[in-house]
Length: 56
Image (cartoon, rainbow, N blue to C red; front, side):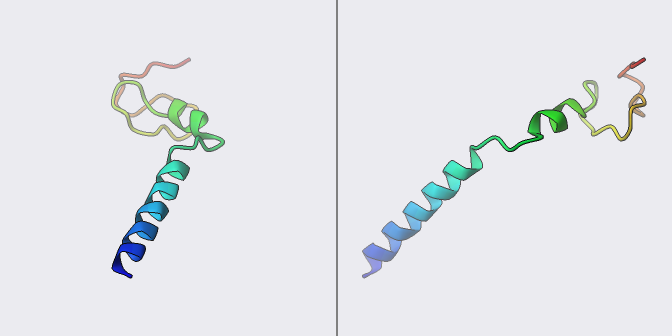
C-alpha cells in the first residue's frame, strides 16, 4: 500500500515538473521588461532607475 502511494506521488511530481517546463504566453514580454544592467523590472517605457539602461 505504501509503495502504491509513493509511486502515485512520484508520478504526480513528474506531471507537475512537465507543466513547469511549459512556456506560458507573455513570458517573452516579461523577460524583455527587465533592465539589462541590474535585472529589475522596468515599469512604463522610461529608463531604469539604476541609470545603466539608456533608452530613447
